[in-house]
Image (cartoon, rainbow, N blue to C red; front, side):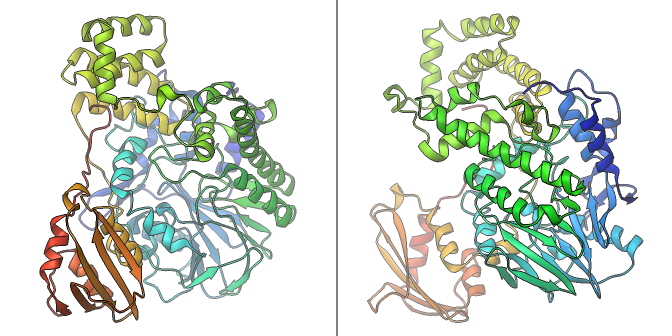
Length: 602
């Protein structure tokens, strides 16, 4: 993307919008858990008020400076936001008797601090409802910091399934990769972590979940909570598998969740996950413009700052819509001309009308990795070239490349030549081969860390910066453990029984279980549900409402007892019939994930 002037009119308008409606700050802007551990520190980013240094991209520096503005803000009559106390925003809508909370952040501690800040300036209003805009943890994890339940909790149909499965099935791998995405071990400094594009970073406190009590099942559905009328739009499959926009007609205020933010979003998170549908995303935005935008005096979101003025709202939503539609259509056009994902990522450039907008900048997503995500959605990992069909895995391939190039020393020398020519991308490729061929090659590791640092400092994308800098850190200092646990008791308890069986099935060590045969009937007495699990040929198969048939073991138990079995509490108190040794045989073939696996080394 073209570089934009840092003092143009559009930037000035965004700066003004980020400050508009300011009521008060949290001072100090530090949140601790019950043990006194700091789980959020906005004050650590005070350095962003300095001039942008050479170690940061000016666009990312500007975006992070806006993120660092924290406190309570008035959005519209009776609508307030707390910004800068977590990765996301918490919005509070005043009703007849209390306040409705939209998106209670990641951590209960941060959510409680945000609610306290609101109450300090708006009075001790009780929480009378909660809305989850979508199924990502930064939009529901802090819910027990604002309510213990007993109030309406609204979300789109399918929310609970997506919220918990995302953090269980591939949870260990995504949690490990998120260390690179957020850079928790990097110093908050001009040389280190300065943001993520979507916010400064994520909090690391207690994650919770209370199941929705009211599902939104269709666009146009209206609900009244505490006297506040709300009209909903379903937007599944774009930014999240389960997501909502909604409109407050009497306030002329539109919530666009995370479907529209002040940057280009990512269609595929770099930590992993399902690929978003760019075409569907654009169509949802066309629909929200038609349904609500002309009647909205303000549009606010779950990240960043609002946009005021009916014309500005329509223009903002339209450009964001055009962004995802353009990326989708151009990727498909070039894909159908035979270009691969990597080639298309190099070829696509945004039109001037989008390239010159601050809110389409690649601070979180980027043209390059969004194009590759679209390609992946349609054609998958294989680019059609038979040479790429059966490649050696990374370490084996690296050993062969390094041998062909004359050994590790020769590869490092070649890399230095490309560094001198400022071809850092190919220098990284060479040095990565050198490290994977011989992880003890200190010269290669140190030089690769140096090049990663240079790439990070030059990146406008917050997550790219963190990925590069975390790669450099782990090359020099070793693996950094994850700083957040998304397998909280609330998330585990929210799993459906089929999801629990899925989580067991993905832990079966296939080769170890090749010759094992066993069957168990599970009668969930409190749920009135029956399941049969059968282990055969290394696969654990589940069946709901199975026919009568002899099995090795029958268990009659509650869901709480079922979860207790999985955490090692044994079968005491469980009604059982058959061979309980079957459980030991099943446990014996379970494998454990490796939470701190290597990424930049073999």
